[in-house]
Every structure is written in structure tokens, then in C-alpha cells.
Picture (cartoon, rainbow, N blue to C red):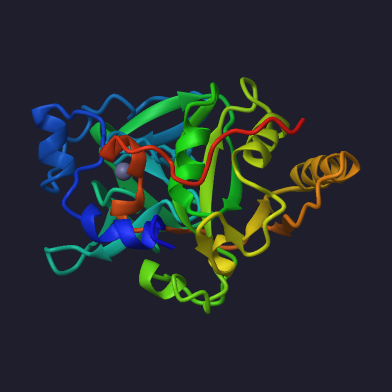
Length: 295
Ligand SMILES: [Zn+2]
């Protein structure tokens, strides 16, 4: 257990994640909850198909098909991607502020009950807090031991837009690292991969996932032991499910005693900031993940 991520986390808090460099204007808005002048943002009249991502940490935030013209002077969305946006009471005492759930960067505010769209919700977002990726994006969720290594090794694949670390599959809402580490909440350390399916297929990513961790180890991965380190593929649609089962069957046919489970994706809870991009920040190398050819 000496090299487990449990041991390392006590050193991690003080380190700064390798997020995008911000312009002074972007820093004013994202880091100090500022607001851009209405009617001036680059994405106000932007209507391409794709995904709006966080300008600081690159996490996917809003799909283009939820964007609408509210007339308020800022880009408006009537829904956010699952688990992407955190809501908290604004310092002004009456509005609800929205922040990036991954990096805690200020995005804008959310308003409900205005009857502007069927969802009756308006996420009013500063353009400067976002970037844009064209085309449809898809998400994949993989659990294969300590999420630091899985995240790190999937990140460099072409077509992958972002990978972040979190928790899935347990009973408790909003779990903390300390809680899931007990192995009693049912969560698995899980990475969320956001990718462009026109550049990289789900099959390619799943094969890579099955080669960078050991799918024959039950409830452990190397020195990390516990159900939170189990091997599991959480699927978001039937095509993903079929691909996952097909690849596991292929490995079994090749003689691997595969224990990887396949389940439908449940709520994804992003992990604390100090777990994100752990190896990139620290310059260390994964201690229990490396690529082994199996396909
Ligand atoms: Zn962010």
C-alpha cells in the first residue's frame, strides 16, 4: 500500500493544476467573479454545433443545442451538461451564481421561472469564461484503479477533449475522497472522457482503457485494494454497452480471466481539484498503470 494515491494526496493540496493561462480580463471574470460588458462577448451570437468548455480547465459545460437567444446580452443556455456546473448563493444575497464544477471558476448566474424556454431555466454565462469545440462530443466513463493513472494515460489520445477524475456507482450524493476511500460507499474511482467521436471511436478508447489497467484484478489494481479500485465500464448508451461486452468477450476468448463489470452510467461526481491532472502537475509517473498490448 505504500505507493497508493491515498499516501500521496496529503502532499497534493498546495500544487496548482496546469490550467490554461488567462488574460487579465478572463482572470478578472473567472477568478474574481467579474462580469463582461453585455452585448460584447464572442459567443453571444455564436450558433455552431458543438460544446462550450471551461476557458480555464477545459471541462465540457454546455451543449450548443441548449443555447438560446434570451436578449439579455450574454450567451444563454437552458441546461448544463450533467454534473458540469455548481450552483451557490451569490454574494449579492439574491441571485444564484454558477461555477465550473471542476475548477471552481466563475461562469455567471442561473435564473429560473422566467418561462423563456420549456426548461424554464437560463444559465447566463460570460463568453470569456468559455471556449468552444466544434462537432458532437461523446462521454465515456471508465473505472480501473487509482484515477490519476487512468486519466493520465487516456489524456494523450488524439480526439480526446478532456479527461477528469471523479466518483461513480455508489449510494451517497456528493461523496468526498475521504468517504469513498473507506470502500464502503460503493463508488469507484472513475474517469470521465469527453471525446470527438469523428476523430477517435469509443471502441478505440475502450481498448486503450483495457490495456492501461489490468482487467483481471478483482477489486484492486496493483497496490491499491478495495472496491473503489474495481474495474468497471459505465456506459451511456446501447452502442457503448454492446462495444464494451464485445471487447470483454474478445479478451476472454484470448484467455484473459477478465473481471471488468459493465453497468449503465449513474451520477458522476467530480473529484476534488487536487486529484485532477495529478501526474501532469507533479511530473511524477503513474505507479500502477502502464500500457500492455492485449488486442
Ligand atoms: Zn473549469
